[in-house]
Image (tube, rainbow, N blue to C red; front, side, top):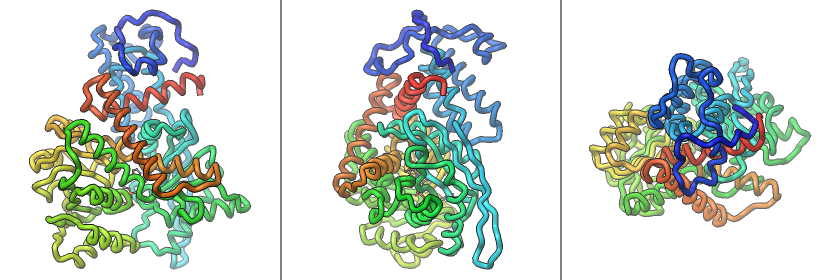
Length: 502
Ligand SMILES: NC(=O)C1=CN([C@@H]2O[C@H](COP(=O)(O)OP(=O)(O)OC[C@H]3O[C@@H](n4cnc5c(N)ncnc54)[C@H](O)[C@@H]3O)[C@@H](O)[C@H]2O)C=CC1
Ligand SMILES: O=C(O)CCC(=O)C(=O)O
């Protein structure tokens, strides 16, 4: 990545005149350097055809990640997705290509040992991670995940996504993510507290309110944030500051942070369905996966708008209410899930109108629906699921989880005329309200729930329009995924350029 301002040479390719022109800070940059200088095209020359050139450069960008980290399949998956959207920019000027290559390497990646004592008195050891991917737009920001599958690959994929998601919020947030291979399932409250305290003891040297501000993700909710915050204070002579978000609203948290990801997802889908299909959410049958924080609050907001959630899932199966979850049934589900370790079978036992489908995902259970909201985990909606959804009448898929839809499934959904709301745009409401929590902490103030909800709603609509407008400029308005990647990348790339080689 060349930190110096590019020489003002004319572009050999025409740059589309458009509303985003002001953001094309690299416009006028020297066109592709000779083969020897880029080092990526030793055996081939770049095509003059912009489309071929774009795909050559996408391949070259992805090969950077593949060569460095061939085993990181999730990270390579997300790098490929973002790079593919950026092809037209890479073909405009090599500065975009080099800026992207620069972004592929995290600023810091910490791995640490987390020893903790279980209830039988035995010492156990877990791995802890924090990736500080990019501080181009603000302090590193992103959640902590406790799940046995967590390793460097998972953390890097999530951290990379977070850079672009946070850019779309328009708040000053860099990108980071962390977590541990600790499995909270089956652990007592005391074990979880001791684990959180040990995790924070290892993490504390690297974080701070203006440096890196973690929050929750899978396996980390309000209770864990409380234990983590308590230990941070203990390690810092009682310093009470906004080093974590998702805190209780009684002691420094923001109203609406628990609800924000799910509610924001629904606000985003409402705007997209109105703009692209002229449809409202009222009476729409909605399949949701997952049954944690994001799924529960997405269902709550869907009910408020008159839509009909019909499923939830966990890693063991799917619960289906053919006539829909009512407010009372959702309350029951939330009550059941509030007990640590509860399974959906506990809900099924209490609701005679429901059916439980062991080992199945919602996408194969429901044969008639309008919208789908994958809110569990990555790669949980695959090609056959996408085919099922289209057959069942689905016209919109909005990602509450991070990267829940495989690339093949996205293609099928888009080809089938589905509106597709990608995670980095559709689920950005959580981190956006985290950004608002940081702002409230910095001012030692607390806004009302109504205020925060209004701000969240405005941010989600704005994110939708950034994506759709950018999609329209580069492709067509329905290509929200492309729009999200390009709009976010342009912001980060401009900041990198302006801050020099960092
Ligand atoms: N909590 C937040 O603010 C945000 C969360 N997300 C994403 O949303 C997704 C869900 O996170 P949360 O609801 O916060 O976590 P959570 O821990 O509250 O709930 C996770 C849910 O997913 C289910 N689950 C986990 N693995 C599964 C699998 N293999 N198959 C089916 N279900 C599975 C669990 O049973 C649980 O119901 C994750 O991808 C997370 O990264 C994204 C943005 C913000
Ligand atoms: O609120 C935050 O900082 C974390 C949100 C998050 O981890 C995510 O958006 O995936």
